[in-house]
Length: 413
Image (tube, rainbow, N blue to C red; front, top):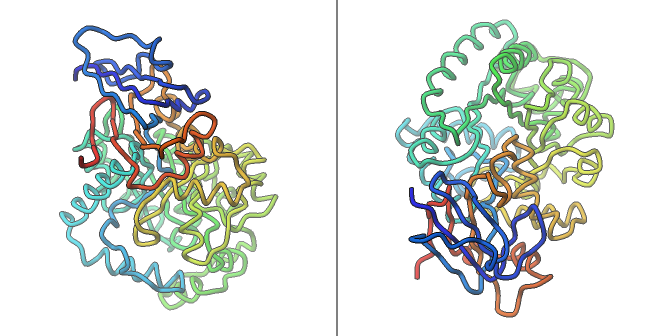
């Protein structure tokens, strides 16, 4: 791949403040060689150069939680009750072939690129997303989901899951990592959590869990009550009665650790947040999905005050469509009382930290991958207002997206 040089009216490297007429030089290896004022970034002979007046350059956005295999299910699950909504999603997924799921993942990844997103942390059970990432030379972590609420079957379920994970390892690349996702407290037994967490630690696999998302989940774990408990009873599955919060339930089973990404965290107490801090967990904050399902607002300010690694995620198009990471960042800003810079951090460097990829993505720092999002600025916006203008931008203001210096999307002329 030839090296390239990209310049624009403003550069927001996210490891420093805005730079007027900045540039990024990306080497043949796909990594940033230099970034800074245009006059200070070299012009090697024969370099491919792109120049974007009236626009800002940022690191490619990092989406901390997606379900790209659900692409195309917009508006097909409108149930207000969360357990019923999940049942509807399961039925819709069963109506798809493996080829359908792979094509959905490809389409979802293309939509991410069109929105300036270059790295995703995706959860799904089909294996379609890691295949799509592999094919596209993409970037991210694909967490393969495992389900199993029956404690007596935990050993067999783990063995089956290990075989599924082994089959997916062929899609890993230097930029695409496989992870595991014991789905949620309402779909995974304590014994399966313990076994998957222990095995993941031995294998060095990252973990993602949906956690403390809904009232029904908390009711199940706290007292064996609620809609999820009734579903378990109808299936003849023993209902657990640990009499604790979902966060404490996972702590008891060894799930909370620096390799663990906790998704949602709407219903958490101060003691829960301390457990997460002690575990060193990352957090995927999905404000629009939380609101759409009526779960409430996650305590973002308290999570930030605890020093947790936090990024925003879009969740799936079945929850909120279209996938718009900057809209999530704006929602997080309102909830957390954040500055524009703090909100943008949640979909760049902060999100990269949350999923453990900040050594390679999240800022336009020499040595990191040359992932770049180009955003058109309104006339007259710039200077100290550049971050505000970018944060307020909509999907139709995206101009181009680069992955490792290769252009993967360009707005129609």
